[in-house]
Length: 235
Ligand SMILES: *C/C=C(C)/C=C/C=C(C)/C=C/C1=C(C)CCCC1(C)C
Image 1 (cartoon, rainbow, N blue to C red):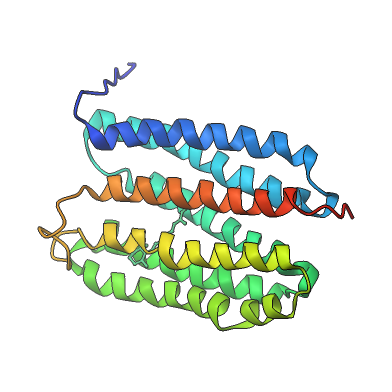
Image 2: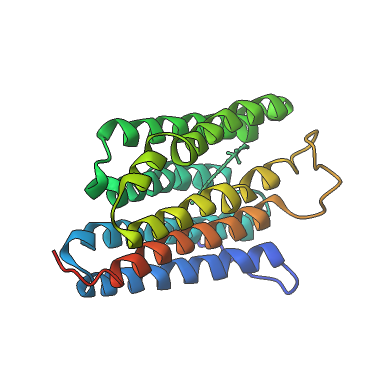
């Protein structure tokens, strides 16, 4: 049977699932189309930007359905989405720094930290909700690992060594997204029962996650796009 889903007036969370879906789709079309206009060496980066928003668009389509028909968090689709898109965001860092000498080791470390962050987050939300504080702390270790790599580790050193001011600017912007934009997610997570912001921040967790996704996924893509389009040397 076809389940009829209705978006009710005042359902702010539902609204952001719809706007999230449409803006991710629109951003994907934009990145895929604009790919033809950037220098050859940045075409893969633009493709990855489009894939990130496209994968999110498909998951938002399903998450909308879960939310509208049950009013509960679409935790599984959320984490499947993140498990695909967060590593792709690590790939964006790698591609950006590749001309400056980024190694596969750097990419591997970024992805491993991401996996730790997301697996622990999923366990805290879906498997051991009563221990969500502990799993949140474990997840944060992964997040801090990513921050270490890009703010102090190899990525930072490569950026300094790069002669390309355009790449340096884009790298700095992307690191700010990870430091500030990605911090939106743990804030959402901390509204879980028994966690630090439960009953303090009166905001739905999915609403916070949806805002985070729009800011970060589209924002990341736009940083990469503006870097690629202003690179005049087509190589
Ligand atoms: C496109 C999706 C992105 C960029 C998702 C990022 C997700 C995070 C940075 C999640 C971080 C978490 C913590 C640092 C602790 C609590 C659990 C998480 C998974 C919400």
